[in-house]
Amino acid sequence: MHPDTLLALSKRLADFAQERDWAQFHSPKNLASALVVEAGELLEPFQWLTEAQSRSLSSEQLAAVTDEMADVLLYLVQLANALQVDLPKAAHEKVTRNEQRYPVEKAKGRSTKHDAL
Image (cartoon, rainbow, N blue to C red; front, side):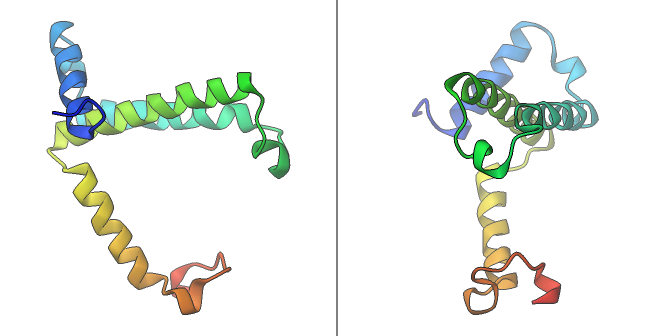
């Protein structure tokens, strides 16, 4: 198994939790709650930045954002494990639905929600 796959990450996380007897705390509700907390922490380094500043982070800011992005991903993968969701498959299916809801000819260059296109 290639170490950069979500499957490898999923297994590593499951092993990590099992070795520490943490599975008992990893209910879908708890994992979803932790995911939301981490997503909030991801927003913190961007607070008070302008749009332009958010596109050119300092190395320290980027390191903080990178750590929070990793935390979000880790909890999302653990939640997928807990619910037996094939995350890459679900993501591809969602992109397919979005392609249908946001056809290029209607959505290009617009941020309008699909039901208002």
